[in-house]
Length: 367
Image 1 (spheres, rainbow, N blue to C red):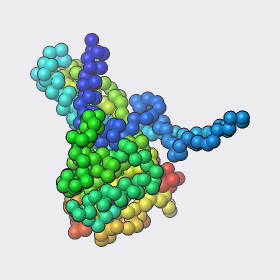
Image 2 (cartoon, rainbow, N blue to C red):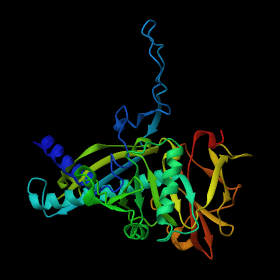
Image 3 (cartoon, rainbow, N blue to C red):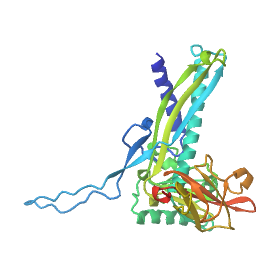
Image 4 (tube, rainbow, N blue to C red):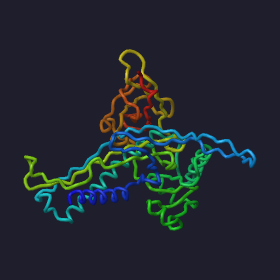
């Protein structure tokens, strides 16, 4: 019975989680992988070319070609848990209504955390597109420019999405080119899509990352992997030596995200964000370290950074509230591992004015 309850509770939380995800599976991320996420890593198929097509010779047949599908390892680097105490009830006597309320809350909280981490990976793996400003007069032209860039990069037209911040959403809703969700199919609307513009399925993303206006992409080129490490269950705390007549809703979910092709994900910043690059650190004591060089788009010369930020920097956030580490462009050596995300902010008058995200590759780290 306990095992059946774990399965039922986990299914309920998972259903809530999937419903609450803004960066949803199928629309923003694919779930194509091989292996068991609970083991610590999985393999993701990466295909950069399509199957070759050639003329068929009835007499001699056709020469076979080899596909170029390869696999990349994805380390499962996120392990999140819920441990919500329910006071006054042992595990056998918790009312169903109270359990349902806690499970609902757990699903919402997990979705919020996974969305935040997924968004950071998307931004770090994206190709930034900087514009001077976005207004009602140029919003459609800006989106068309994103569309054109993706088409030239041979990103499939069907299935493209556009995640837009609330201010940008307000401009899109006023655009005559916007097609409301009522004109789209029911399957599309289930994902929270509010409409379509320039071929993109539009979804509002209540994100406050500094200067970010929108994020465009295709689910084929970004993967999300998530699984229960420990299924959700009601744990009696009678033997804890600390809690009396109490229990807790507990569960652990492991997950990771990866962008497979940078040109397929476009982050639009207005005004433009920082542009930065990574290189392996040099000199004594450089092993395991990388160096960030800010190359363009900055205002002023004061920078700070965080590795794998739990929350992304917002516009006009004070340097004290940000709490990052001071960075000197091209000089500061940062201890990292492959797959880490580095957030770099430009500070002017001790406030965040621009931001850049970088994904650390093995070649970026000094041996």
